[in-house]
Amino acid sequence: MNTARPTPALAGAADPAVDWARVRADFPLLTRQVHGKPLVYLDSANTGQKPAVVIDTVDDFYRRHNANVSRAVHALGSEATEAYEAARGKLARHLNVRADEMVLTSGTTFAINLVAYAWALPRLKPGDAILLTRMEHHANIVPWQLIAERAGAVIRVAEITPDGALDLDALHAAMTPEVKLLGVTHVSNVLGTVNPVRGICREARRRGIVTVVDGSQAVPHMAVDIAAIGCDFYAFTGHKMCGPTGTGGLWGRREHLQAMPPFLGGGEMIRQVRFEGTVFNDPPHRFEAGTPNIAGHIGLGAAVDYLDALGMDRVAEREADLLAHLTQAMQQVEGLRIFGTAPHKASVVSFLVEGAHAHDLATLLDLEGVAVRSGHHCAHPLMQYFGVPATCRASVAFYNTHDEIEAFVAALRKVRRLLG
Ligand code: PMP
Picture 1 (cartoon, rainbow, N blue to C red):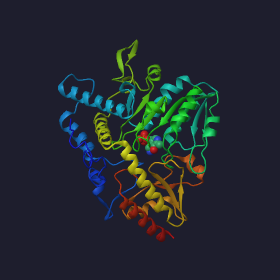
Picture 2 (cartoon, rainbow, N blue to C red):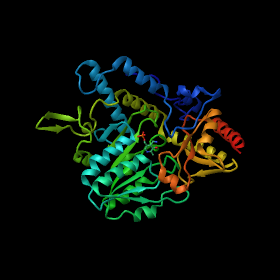
Picture 3 (cartoon, helix red, strand yellow):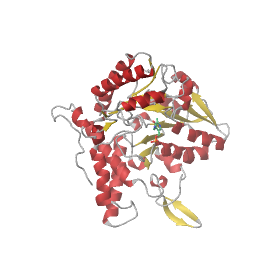
Picture 4 (cartoon, rainbow, N blue to C red):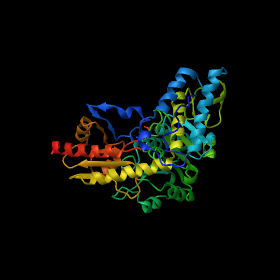
């Protein structure tokens, strides 16, 4: 497998400081122009850009190793299987869990649906409740609604405070005996709020409530120790953490995974098939029916190597610095409102400018070379809470620069004048 350039630019063994300009140079796409202007990519919460080592790893797999996993005994088949399983191991180590508890999925959406259909649906009874928070992404709402309807269970919602933090007293008070499952996001994709998931999961566990943490916006930005969080399930997506699209995973406690029936049936997830009945494989393979995204997950393994070499604590520190600059600079723009001002935030600033629609803002910013997301961010209930149909969202990653933040704010002022 290609291991070229897995190590980002550390300034030197004696000095663990990172040369962020060299790190940025690892991301080929960031050199391009759009509409004749240098690209300022502030949409990493939507999907992250990929370092060359990830692109090269995927390319190398197809050029030199391509074969299906776990089926062929030939050399290529063994190489593909080894690399795919190695990626599982890297992810598990990165998140401090066992590899045999790590199900590889197409992302968070699949991971949460897997818990919904294979854990919750067989267990929930009429009158049971699923507790969610106001700030969940639709991927952590809609699967539960589908399941609740079929099981006769109800959805209960824990509210937030006006600054965009979870109301922890209300959340704990909502953990009544009917609640069998809690779905909570680690980091909000709209507000940037980092939720204290460790304490929340401890409270839930004391009450016998199974916890599903949506880690989509946490794993790209900080060191995540799933074992320390103490949840029952942790879902995440690979494309926001420098990996290819269509990758991600679900970590689940062994006892849950072993007790869960398959979600999808097919090849790979069986030990023996007879028309009279089928013996299923053990987890995690029981939940990986069919040919998986082999190249993608091997690429995700390379992304994990890349992030590990960089160090997630350094990533978090760099992004905190960028976020502080971004927030402070945006606060100087007249008529700009920020949604989500909780004390503990990661990498995301949602905003609106008085009198301007989010999509108009994003379209005009695009003409200045600035990519931000506009819309409801798959969080309708949160938009409803704030009484707006949509917001703009600027999100940073460690490869962004302070100069880009200045360029963005200058573009914002220009756009504001145009719209005003
Ligand atoms: N949850 C959160 C908090 C997210 O930000 C996203 C991606 N926008 C998802 C879930 C869904 O992830 P995916 O589309 O990769 O399955």
